Amino acid sequence: MIKFVYCVRRHPDLTPEAFRKYWLENHGPLVKKFAKALRARRYVQSHTLDTELNVYAMKPRGTKEPYDGITEVWWDKAEDLIAAL
Image (tube, rainbow, N blue to C red; front, side):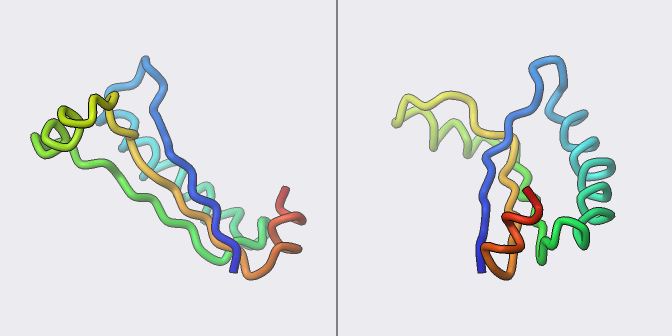
């Protein structure tokens, strides 16, 4: 299996809520629609939770705002990924 992992940030003009809504309701279904043509076996969206826990994780590390999410796309073999690209 081949897995791509993408760390996702929303466009600065979008609120976190608008981004999550679009990603979940528009982008996700679009990927699902074309998954067979892309030879993708699996597509996973992991949405960031906006909680005070983020502050506890960021502050000691001096990190920036967390990503808005992570996307995983899986292919059975490298040839399928190459064909998708």
